[in-house]
Length: 292
Length: 280
Image 1: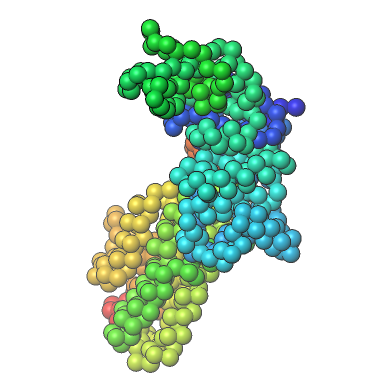
Image 2: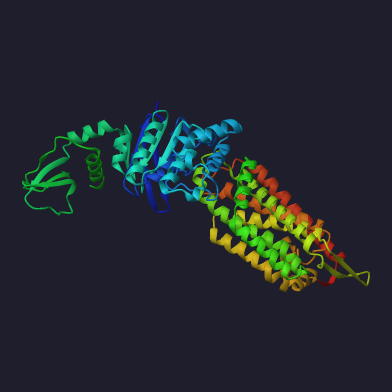
């Protein structure tokens, strides 16, 4: 059964077309939404949460048709959402905020709610800061509090918009583990522009740049990229500063400068097809195809 | 749901630094003036008007949190009622605090007026103006509704709330006789329309019967609230959940108009009974 289904979804702000004819059918698990800045990831996520209505097309999530108000209301009861820039009431403590959201999500039994609030705060590692005002939290802690409020009612669907942007490496690693753990039990849609985050956590990926470039399994994507022979390795006696080349990595030793290039290598170079390929290279290949 | 929004707002109000700085300042300021006449009005209404500024700040924060709020059982009707209820309760608490201060420290002060009644001048004065408290409470309700309608426009809301605060502080005292003249003069006078807004005429009739203030205040507030809900339902471009039948909005609008009309008649009738020559 497809847990995410998009049929001809388009979104336009005035003359500016943000999303164009999106068609996707994906199953559950952990799904990465990957695309450059301004690709329309946040807009798509807002459409999936019902926060924005698409200009055209139909979307359904976890079997709920988002165009139907009753089904959307039903979805909201089983949805956890962490926006790109989570904001809180600055004078409230972490536990007060999570408790408030739990009440608004319909958890009326105070004993059960208190236990759920403690559990979610503990899960994200904020137990020591539960009674701290939210304005005193660091950026990483605020993102974790965003996760805590989203999972307090144990939702079937969790949508997280760019949770790792701007975090230090340690906090990013912590976030990946957190999301991977959550992805075992529910559908998690995880938007990012950092390829490494997807590699570490997701098995399915949607690549977006106004329209969908790819939607499916990670392994299938790598297989396609390998078959298309998109990555090349070359060695040059002098450094290459060509802006036209998509150089994904470089190193140098006594034999010269070694480069990995995505796309067409320079004419007359000693480039040969690379034996392995990574997601970052497949991603660049997709972006090059979209721009062509 | 209304209770949750209401308690949430009360928590925000109780921790607002601006309020905790302004309230003691106003009390000290009014005590310095001896709590006589206009200073008494100013203390009570000014303290309540501080809440309007707090309201705007909370609206701004709600807008920032809205993406999280919307993915709960949030709906606009419950949210609006919860907010209005919370700020009404806060107004009531502030009025009680002011009343206690007046009771203990306002021994020398009194408010009142000289009325023309049956061709004679009658002096009305009182030391504990409960009517003023009553009317101040109702005069705040339309202001909160107006700020609710402006909740997506932070600067407009802030200018409105600060403007109202300054208006109470200075202009009402200066304009009072003119507003009164406009209310009593036959024919077209824009000041007549200003006088029907309860918030602008509390000062004029601090001592008068509070009943004629209830219907116009509720009528204005209802018109604002249901008008705003109707606008969101029929002309809103966002998917903000409202979960309210159009028929209820229509009924609310009709009842509000009726309340405003009857309140206006009541208010005019009140003006003919009380015709103050001086207010002190």
